[in-house]
Image (cartoon, rainbow, N blue to C red; front, side, top):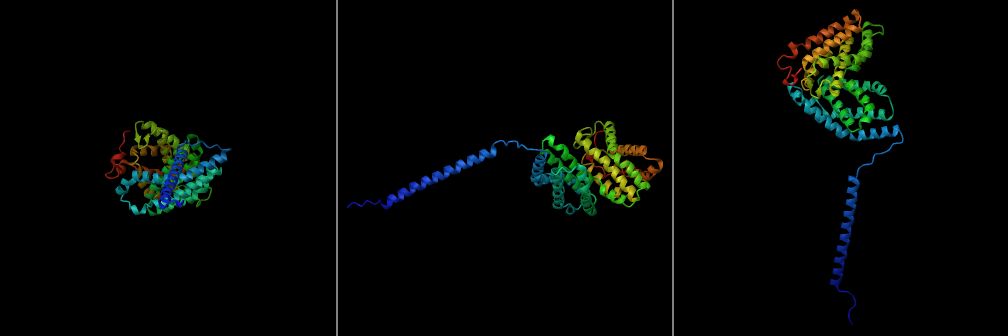
Length: 349
Protein backbone atom coordinates (compact mmCIF):
# COMPACT_ATOMS: atom_id res chain seq x y z
CA UNK A 1 0.00 0.00 0.00
CA UNK A 2 1.26 3.34 -0.95
CA UNK A 3 1.71 5.71 2.02
CA UNK A 4 -0.76 8.60 1.50
CA UNK A 5 0.87 10.93 4.07
CA UNK A 6 3.22 13.58 2.72
CA UNK A 7 6.85 13.11 3.29
CA UNK A 8 8.87 15.15 5.77
CA UNK A 9 10.42 17.05 2.90
CA UNK A 10 6.93 18.01 1.70
CA UNK A 11 6.09 19.45 5.15
CA UNK A 12 9.34 21.41 5.05
CA UNK A 13 8.57 22.83 1.61
CA UNK A 14 5.07 23.83 2.63
CA UNK A 15 6.32 25.46 5.85
CA UNK A 16 8.92 27.42 3.89
CA UNK A 17 6.27 28.51 1.42
CA UNK A 18 3.86 29.53 4.21
CA UNK A 19 6.61 31.36 6.07
CA UNK A 20 7.57 33.22 2.94
CA UNK A 21 3.95 34.12 2.33
CA UNK A 22 3.51 35.35 5.90
CA UNK A 23 6.74 37.31 5.75
CA UNK A 24 5.64 38.91 2.52
CA UNK A 25 2.24 39.78 4.01
CA UNK A 26 3.86 41.26 7.12
CA UNK A 27 6.30 43.27 5.04
CA UNK A 28 3.50 44.48 2.80
CA UNK A 29 1.37 45.49 5.81
CA UNK A 30 4.32 47.31 7.46
CA UNK A 31 5.04 49.12 4.24
CA UNK A 32 1.42 50.16 3.82
CA UNK A 33 1.26 51.38 7.42
CA UNK A 34 4.51 53.35 7.00
CA UNK A 35 3.24 54.96 3.79
CA UNK A 36 -0.01 55.97 5.49
CA UNK A 37 1.91 57.40 8.44
CA UNK A 38 4.14 59.47 6.16
CA UNK A 39 1.09 60.74 4.30
CA UNK A 40 -0.47 61.84 7.57
CA UNK A 41 2.71 63.55 8.74
CA UNK A 42 3.37 65.34 5.46
CA UNK A 43 -0.12 66.49 4.64
CA UNK A 44 -0.78 70.21 5.27
CA UNK A 45 -2.22 70.89 8.68
CA UNK A 46 -5.74 72.15 8.56
CA UNK A 47 -6.35 75.45 10.32
CA UNK A 48 -8.26 74.73 13.52
CA UNK A 49 -11.48 76.59 14.03
CA UNK A 50 -12.49 77.99 17.39
CA UNK A 51 -15.94 78.69 18.67
CA UNK A 52 -14.86 81.85 20.46
CA UNK A 53 -11.94 84.00 21.57
CA UNK A 54 -11.52 82.01 24.78
CA UNK A 55 -10.85 78.79 22.85
CA UNK A 56 -8.40 80.61 20.59
CA UNK A 57 -6.46 82.04 23.50
CA UNK A 58 -6.34 78.67 25.24
CA UNK A 59 -4.94 77.09 22.07
CA UNK A 60 -2.31 79.84 21.66
CA UNK A 61 -1.27 79.50 25.31
CA UNK A 62 -0.90 75.74 24.89
CA UNK A 63 1.18 76.17 21.72
CA UNK A 64 3.50 78.67 23.39
CA UNK A 65 3.88 76.50 26.49
CA UNK A 66 4.87 73.51 24.33
CA UNK A 67 7.41 75.66 22.46
CA UNK A 68 8.87 77.30 25.55
CA UNK A 69 11.69 74.83 26.19
CA UNK A 70 13.30 74.91 22.70
CA UNK A 71 12.63 78.64 22.39
CA UNK A 72 14.33 79.30 25.73
CA UNK A 73 17.37 77.32 24.61
CA UNK A 74 17.49 79.28 21.35
CA UNK A 75 17.20 82.57 23.24
CA UNK A 76 20.06 81.59 25.54
CA UNK A 77 22.27 80.76 22.56
CA UNK A 78 21.59 84.22 21.15
CA UNK A 79 22.24 85.92 24.49
CA UNK A 80 25.47 84.02 25.04
CA UNK A 81 26.66 84.70 21.51
CA UNK A 82 26.14 88.44 21.97
CA UNK A 83 27.68 88.73 25.43
CA UNK A 84 30.41 86.07 25.48
CA UNK A 85 33.11 88.62 24.65
CA UNK A 86 31.83 90.94 27.36
CA UNK A 87 32.23 88.21 29.98
CA UNK A 88 35.94 88.18 29.20
CA UNK A 89 36.28 91.95 28.79
CA UNK A 90 34.54 92.65 32.10
CA UNK A 91 36.29 89.74 33.84
CA UNK A 92 33.00 88.23 34.94
CA UNK A 93 33.19 84.87 36.66
CA UNK A 94 31.33 82.52 34.26
CA UNK A 95 30.18 80.39 37.19
CA UNK A 96 27.90 83.16 38.49
CA UNK A 97 25.92 83.13 35.21
CA UNK A 98 23.75 80.06 35.70
CA UNK A 99 21.67 79.35 32.57
CA UNK A 100 19.68 76.62 34.36
CA UNK A 101 18.62 78.98 37.14
CA UNK A 102 17.68 81.64 34.61
CA UNK A 103 15.77 79.09 32.50
CA UNK A 104 13.79 78.01 35.57
CA UNK A 105 12.64 81.58 36.15
CA UNK A 106 11.85 81.98 32.43
CA UNK A 107 9.52 78.95 32.50
CA UNK A 108 7.80 80.08 35.67
CA UNK A 109 7.16 83.67 34.56
CA UNK A 110 6.14 82.96 30.97
CA UNK A 111 3.77 80.20 32.00
CA UNK A 112 2.05 82.72 34.27
CA UNK A 113 1.85 85.12 31.34
CA UNK A 114 0.27 82.41 29.16
CA UNK A 115 -2.19 81.56 31.92
CA UNK A 116 -3.16 85.20 32.41
CA UNK A 117 -3.59 85.68 28.66
CA UNK A 118 -5.77 82.57 28.35
CA UNK A 119 -7.83 83.65 31.36
CA UNK A 120 -8.46 87.16 29.96
CA UNK A 121 -6.62 88.81 32.84
CA UNK A 122 -5.78 92.32 31.65
CA UNK A 123 -2.07 92.96 30.94
CA UNK A 124 -2.13 95.85 33.42
CA UNK A 125 -3.38 93.55 36.15
CA UNK A 126 -0.81 90.92 35.18
CA UNK A 127 1.93 93.56 35.41
CA UNK A 128 0.88 94.44 38.95
CA UNK A 129 0.51 90.83 40.11
CA UNK A 130 3.84 89.70 38.64
CA UNK A 131 5.84 92.72 39.86
CA UNK A 132 6.90 91.31 43.27
CA UNK A 133 8.06 88.04 41.73
CA UNK A 134 10.05 89.77 39.00
CA UNK A 135 11.45 92.13 41.62
CA UNK A 136 12.61 89.11 43.62
CA UNK A 137 14.23 87.58 40.52
CA UNK A 138 15.96 90.84 39.78
CA UNK A 139 17.21 91.23 43.35
CA UNK A 140 18.39 87.61 43.41
CA UNK A 141 20.65 88.01 40.39
CA UNK A 142 21.88 91.54 41.08
CA UNK A 143 22.91 90.47 44.58
CA UNK A 144 25.49 88.14 43.02
CA UNK A 145 26.76 90.74 40.54
CA UNK A 146 24.61 93.60 39.17
CA UNK A 147 25.85 92.89 35.65
CA UNK A 148 24.26 89.43 35.65
CA UNK A 149 20.86 91.10 35.23
CA UNK A 150 22.01 91.94 31.68
CA UNK A 151 22.05 88.23 30.83
CA UNK A 152 18.75 87.63 32.63
CA UNK A 153 16.86 90.50 31.00
CA UNK A 154 18.17 89.62 27.53
CA UNK A 155 17.21 85.97 27.99
CA UNK A 156 13.66 86.95 28.91
CA UNK A 157 13.49 89.51 26.10
CA UNK A 158 14.64 87.17 23.34
CA UNK A 159 12.43 84.38 24.64
CA UNK A 160 9.43 86.67 24.28
CA UNK A 161 10.49 87.83 20.82
CA UNK A 162 10.99 84.29 19.55
CA UNK A 163 7.66 83.17 20.98
CA UNK A 164 5.88 85.98 19.16
CA UNK A 165 7.45 84.87 15.89
CA UNK A 166 5.51 81.61 16.20
CA UNK A 167 2.23 83.47 15.92
CA UNK A 168 0.46 85.27 13.14
CA UNK A 169 0.79 89.07 13.29
CA UNK A 170 -2.88 89.43 14.23
CA UNK A 171 -2.31 87.26 17.32
CA UNK A 172 0.72 89.12 18.66
CA UNK A 173 -0.68 92.46 19.77
CA UNK A 174 -2.20 91.54 23.11
CA UNK A 175 0.54 89.09 24.05
CA UNK A 176 3.17 91.76 23.43
CA UNK A 177 1.68 93.72 26.33
CA UNK A 178 2.22 90.80 28.72
CA UNK A 179 5.78 90.32 27.49
CA UNK A 180 6.48 94.07 27.76
CA UNK A 181 5.45 93.96 31.41
CA UNK A 182 8.04 91.24 31.97
CA UNK A 183 10.72 93.16 30.08
CA UNK A 184 10.05 96.39 31.94
CA UNK A 185 10.36 94.84 35.39
CA UNK A 186 13.62 93.11 34.50
CA UNK A 187 15.28 96.00 32.66
CA UNK A 188 14.16 98.56 35.23
CA UNK A 189 14.40 98.49 39.05
CA UNK A 190 10.67 99.17 39.35
CA UNK A 191 10.08 97.02 42.42
CA UNK A 192 13.06 98.66 44.12
CA UNK A 193 11.47 102.05 43.41
CA UNK A 194 8.13 100.84 44.84
CA UNK A 195 9.84 99.54 47.97
CA UNK A 196 11.73 102.81 48.47
CA UNK A 197 8.56 104.85 47.95
CA UNK A 198 6.79 102.93 50.71
CA UNK A 199 9.14 104.58 53.25
CA UNK A 200 7.78 108.07 52.56
CA UNK A 201 4.60 109.80 53.71
CA UNK A 202 2.21 110.52 50.87
CA UNK A 203 2.70 114.30 51.00
CA UNK A 204 6.50 114.18 50.95
CA UNK A 205 8.37 116.23 48.35
CA UNK A 206 10.14 113.13 46.99
CA UNK A 207 6.90 111.26 46.36
CA UNK A 208 5.38 114.35 44.80
CA UNK A 209 8.23 114.43 42.28
CA UNK A 210 7.78 110.76 41.41
CA UNK A 211 3.98 111.06 41.22
CA UNK A 212 4.42 113.88 38.72
CA UNK A 213 7.00 112.10 36.55
CA UNK A 214 5.86 108.47 36.64
CA UNK A 215 2.57 108.79 34.68
CA UNK A 216 4.40 110.80 32.00
CA UNK A 217 7.50 108.58 31.76
CA UNK A 218 6.40 106.80 28.58
CA UNK A 219 5.47 109.99 26.74
CA UNK A 220 8.72 111.59 27.92
CA UNK A 221 10.67 108.62 26.58
CA UNK A 222 8.86 108.74 23.24
CA UNK A 223 9.57 112.45 22.74
CA UNK A 224 13.21 112.03 23.72
CA UNK A 225 13.74 109.08 21.38
CA UNK A 226 12.11 110.96 18.49
CA UNK A 227 14.50 113.89 18.99
CA UNK A 228 17.52 111.60 19.32
CA UNK A 229 16.54 109.85 16.08
CA UNK A 230 16.31 113.20 14.31
CA UNK A 231 19.69 114.27 15.67
CA UNK A 232 21.44 111.02 14.67
CA UNK A 233 19.76 110.08 11.37
CA UNK A 234 22.63 107.89 10.13
CA UNK A 235 23.33 106.01 13.34
CA UNK A 236 23.18 102.23 12.92
CA UNK A 237 22.58 100.09 16.01
CA UNK A 238 22.90 96.32 16.10
CA UNK A 239 19.25 95.86 15.09
CA UNK A 240 19.13 98.65 12.49
CA UNK A 241 18.74 102.45 12.22
CA UNK A 242 17.32 104.46 15.09
CA UNK A 243 14.05 105.08 13.26
CA UNK A 244 13.36 101.37 12.71
CA UNK A 245 10.45 100.04 14.83
CA UNK A 246 12.64 97.52 16.69
CA UNK A 247 15.32 100.03 17.67
CA UNK A 248 12.73 102.70 18.49
CA UNK A 249 11.01 100.29 20.89
CA UNK A 250 14.24 99.33 22.66
CA UNK A 251 15.40 102.97 22.76
CA UNK A 252 12.11 104.05 24.33
CA UNK A 253 12.49 101.33 26.94
CA UNK A 254 16.03 102.55 27.70
CA UNK A 255 14.81 106.14 28.11
CA UNK A 256 12.20 104.86 30.57
CA UNK A 257 14.88 102.78 32.29
CA UNK A 258 17.07 105.83 32.96
CA UNK A 259 14.08 107.62 34.48
CA UNK A 260 13.40 104.68 36.79
CA UNK A 261 17.00 104.64 38.00
CA UNK A 262 16.66 108.35 38.65
CA UNK A 263 13.61 107.73 40.85
CA UNK A 264 15.44 105.05 42.81
CA UNK A 265 18.36 107.43 43.44
CA UNK A 266 15.93 110.12 44.57
CA UNK A 267 13.93 107.85 46.87
CA UNK A 268 16.90 105.99 48.33
CA UNK A 269 18.90 109.23 48.61
CA UNK A 270 21.82 107.22 47.33
CA UNK A 271 23.45 107.06 43.88
CA UNK A 272 24.76 103.53 44.36
CA UNK A 273 22.16 101.94 42.05
CA UNK A 274 23.50 104.04 39.17
CA UNK A 275 27.16 103.54 40.04
CA UNK A 276 27.00 99.83 40.78
CA UNK A 277 24.27 98.67 38.39
CA UNK A 278 23.22 101.07 35.61
CA UNK A 279 26.65 102.26 34.52
CA UNK A 280 28.32 98.80 34.44
CA UNK A 281 25.32 97.44 32.51
CA UNK A 282 25.54 100.22 29.93
CA UNK A 283 29.29 99.71 29.53
CA UNK A 284 28.67 95.99 28.96
CA UNK A 285 25.64 96.22 26.68
CA UNK A 286 25.87 99.43 24.67
CA UNK A 287 29.11 98.61 22.84
CA UNK A 288 27.64 95.19 22.01
CA UNK A 289 24.61 96.84 20.38
CA UNK A 290 26.57 99.61 18.65
CA UNK A 291 25.14 102.39 20.78
CA UNK A 292 27.20 105.56 20.47
CA UNK A 293 28.05 107.21 23.78
CA UNK A 294 27.34 110.64 22.28
CA UNK A 295 23.80 109.43 21.67
CA UNK A 296 23.48 108.46 25.35
CA UNK A 297 24.71 111.88 26.47
CA UNK A 298 22.21 113.63 24.20
CA UNK A 299 19.41 111.45 25.55
CA UNK A 300 20.32 112.44 29.12
CA UNK A 301 20.34 116.12 28.20
CA UNK A 302 16.87 115.81 26.66
CA UNK A 303 15.57 113.89 29.68
CA UNK A 304 16.75 116.66 31.97
CA UNK A 305 14.98 119.28 29.83
CA UNK A 306 11.75 117.30 30.01
CA UNK A 307 11.96 116.95 33.79
CA UNK A 308 12.75 120.65 34.28
CA UNK A 309 9.58 121.58 32.39
CA UNK A 310 7.41 119.30 34.54
CA UNK A 311 8.71 120.15 38.01
CA UNK A 312 8.85 123.27 40.12
CA UNK A 313 12.33 124.62 40.99
CA UNK A 314 12.16 123.11 44.48
CA UNK A 315 11.08 119.76 43.06
CA UNK A 316 13.77 119.71 40.40
CA UNK A 317 16.36 120.50 43.06
CA UNK A 318 15.71 116.99 44.37
CA UNK A 319 16.84 115.55 41.01
CA UNK A 320 19.63 117.94 40.05
CA UNK A 321 22.41 116.07 41.85
CA UNK A 322 21.49 112.78 40.20
CA UNK A 323 21.40 114.33 36.73
CA UNK A 324 24.85 115.80 37.43
CA UNK A 325 26.06 112.34 38.43
CA UNK A 326 24.76 110.81 35.20
CA UNK A 327 26.38 113.58 33.18
CA UNK A 328 29.70 112.94 34.93
CA UNK A 329 29.88 109.17 34.61
CA UNK A 330 28.78 109.20 30.97
CA UNK A 331 31.09 112.07 30.03
CA UNK A 332 33.63 111.64 27.21
CA UNK A 333 36.45 111.64 29.80
CA UNK A 334 34.97 108.44 31.22
CA UNK A 335 33.35 106.58 28.34
CA UNK A 336 36.06 107.33 25.81
CA UNK A 337 38.80 106.41 28.26
CA UNK A 338 40.97 103.53 27.09
CA UNK A 339 39.38 100.15 27.81
CA UNK A 340 35.87 101.51 28.42
CA UNK A 341 34.56 101.93 24.89
CA UNK A 342 35.29 99.12 22.47
CA UNK A 343 35.58 99.56 18.71
CA UNK A 344 32.06 98.21 18.30
CA UNK A 345 30.68 101.29 20.06
CA UNK A 346 31.99 103.60 17.36
CA UNK A 347 29.15 104.13 14.93
CA UNK A 348 28.50 106.75 12.30
CA UNK A 349 26.37 109.56 13.64
